[in-house]
Amino acid sequence: MIKDLFLNFSLFIFFLFGFHRLQNILRQKLPNKFQIVVGMIHGIFGIILILFGIHVFEINILDFRQLAIISAAYFGGFRAAIITGMIIVAFRLSYFGINEGSIFAFITISINVIVSGFISKLVKNYWFKWIYMILCVMILSSSFFFYQHIKYSHQLFPIMPICESFILMGGLFIAVFISFLNRNEEIKLALKESEERYRSLIETSPDGIFVHKNGIIMLANEKAGTLLGTEKSKDLIGLNIFHLLDPNLKSKSFDSFEIFSHFRDTIVQKDNNYTRLDGKAVDLSFSESNIIYETKEATMVVFRDISEQKNTERKLQQANKLLHQLSISDGLTGIPNRRYFEEMYKLKWEEAQASQKPLSLIIFDIDFFKKFNDSYGHLEGDKCLKIVANTVSKTLDITSDFCARFGGEEFIGICDTDEKGACIIAEKIRKSVLDLKLPNMNSGVNQFVTISIGVMSLVPNLSIKMEDAVDYADKALYTAKLNGRNQVHFYHIDNEIFI
Image (cartoon, rainbow, N blue to C red; front, side, top):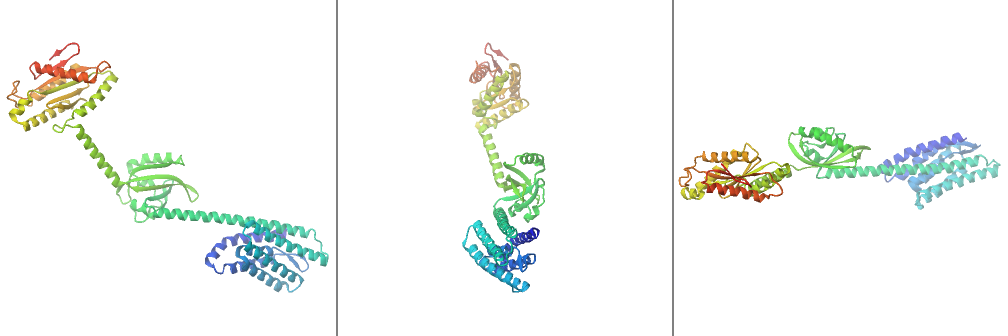
């Protein structure tokens, strides 16, 4: 008997599982006839339960058709319960004939239909609804056994306790089972809605978005296809993201991807150059974050074209570089100006002080340049300054030395050498200017343009100020002029050395 009840109950569980999946389709396809269809399906299943029922007495069958009625009431309401009850009663009467068992079945089914129908309609709480309907079935089932006991002296035990236990436990199990299916369906629906919502957001996003697993693109929106040079986004599906990278960036980007993969909660933002599928190079700014896609770990990449921004930045950098160059260059001669000299002088002074290496200053100016301007004009004077500045710069070009216009016809240079090396360089500069053979007939020194040079060399320390070193070199220049010009004079703190 218990084995047969388990079979009957198993059929009912199998039916509920299938119907629960079917009900959503029925609601969509037959919204106006849903209750009728629910009632008919449960009624047909009630017939199956009767066929697999258990003969407990001569003309009485025990099965779970009453649970089929409350299931119909739960899913389809009062109308569905009525239709299920009518089908079950009609089959019971036609199959077993009109007898006492059929009449009693008709009465209990009718009561169950009415009570379950009202309960499903009036009781809102899920669990109370099922408990009330199950108690109704248990009361009806108990009345059947008491009736048989009173009229035919049939024993109540053990059949009645077993049957009632199956109804109670089976009903509660069905309630839990349906609750689980409902919850599962709600989760699936929520996930589907969430996925649709995210898909909609992705598709309407002004940025390109794609999702990849281990570098293989699984999902992409239309904007991603446009930015990466495809006619349709589906052309990106299956591509390896590293095929889109500039070849020079592949190794570095792969290492970055490996690091990113080990830190799943990070969001990385980068700018990279990509080669579109149509061959065009494009600058993209992108951010990537880890997500769950189709129940597996994946990476979502959001990116936009910043080529125009990058071009603007490059132009701005070039403009800033040019502006900086102009700010440190002398407008006439093109060599560094005094401002840049002061910056470089401070830097070289600190380096020499830290390394305790010698640093030399060379100051020179053109002899009697005022007479040159008076004789040949200011335009020729400017031209002379340019030629001299260019010549000196070329003379110093083979070293790490540095020369700038200090003011007027005066120039200053910095050399990373000692006094001997500085004097050699200074003499070389003097001769290179003289060898230009620029006419200066009224200078009184030479028929050609000449320069006078003052040199100062020292190892910077805390007892000497930067300004003092410049002053010493300037004093050496002044001495060179007093001694007849067109010469190099070296200034030493303790004594003076002439060349």
